[in-house]
Length: 157
Length: 416
Image 1: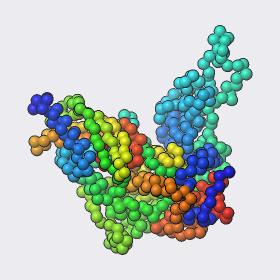
Image 2: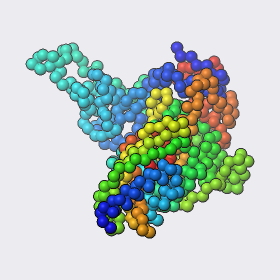
Image 3: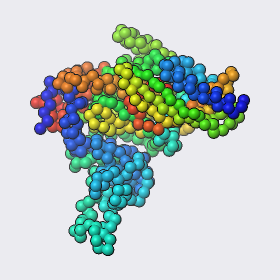
Image 4: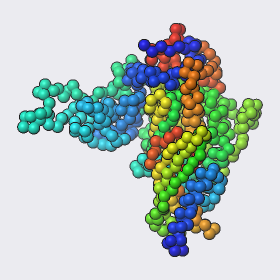
């Protein structure tokens, strides 16, 4: 794979990540993760200071699936729609078959009456692998700069 | 003089105005947050070494908590005695003194003014007058007291010593949760668009726990059919909500909830490790969450432990700061388990995300009906008493009873 081709595929993966969440297709979103995977949301403060507490922590595919099922079927949270804006990723290295990347994100939310604004911003620190001929997240950490979370976190960042 | 009309002396009706009126909020600053009650500031484990400091808020007032050179703890207003600037802008750190960036007034760790640049001017021109007394220009000091590694402060001379204020109920709870040296695992913060008192109510309302939180019911973490209840201190200002896990069975719970048309078995987890409870407290309670007047909860929920500090931001918002911890001697496995279980709590918690939404929808909808009242009479009216059952919100009335006393707005014959 050429570097340019790889960049295109990584950009596509990140864009799909945002689009599936924004469309409310969380089951489809699960498909972007590798069989062995983890997904976390961390306050930037904890991440920088080395504290392990996350805002959401799924250390296996099973835990990620549980989170999605609960969000779709059981949890009550603020009615809203999300809009992701994700920056161009930078690749910091390849280790074995794992691509390490970082990308900025900006997430806006609108409520049930159509009122909206900036909800969260920060960066993704991801590990991506090729599985079944497609790019998949093996590890994804959303590090939130505005770690005083407005209202609550429900749908994934 | 602020007058509040209570429909009932047992606080079973709570005027919505108390959540929305800016005048009430101002009075709270004076009578509660700058008044003679003890408020939570931080944990000693956050400032272990001499010179360690942390900044926080007590109501609208910025506060600076510092560990002195002899290990003592000081708390003072984090506001320069000169022009009112924040002295410390960072969340925490370590230093030998505190210096305001604006004009570099420098303070000892205890808040006393240490040095003023150009105090005598330059070439005897300018500067401060001869009679300027540095002793009169320190950072305003709070009274400080600690219990089992928990730091409390008060702006006014407190009406009672800390241990008496907390009472045996809360000191006993802290004896349990702070039984060993703790290790801070990190912080979670969220800004909820509701009045700060609604969080205190939420903590004291066990009625909602298994109705709003379907997740808890489904997985038997907290069901009204379990043995549990609420206990208050003698003055009913603090509360503990507790549950014993495994004291009901799934069939019994399913029946009780299905009679109310509530699903109790709609989900199953692919990975149930998060729900494990490893017994670690002598009282056998799997969940024990205290609400301590006015601004903190000490919560153990299965194997997670955290303080939740309430920082009001005007009548219409508050910040909730979760300080999550484990014990210094935790095994790697237990530490990992605690972190995994924290998925239940915090701004993104399976359970807690629902509390913030409940508070916000009450706040939003009650704005227009300030002269009407909320109904608080589940579990009984009249006397405010402990309940060895869970379908109750009696401790909410306890909160309002003490609140009214401190605020000086008790009704005639108000129940205490």
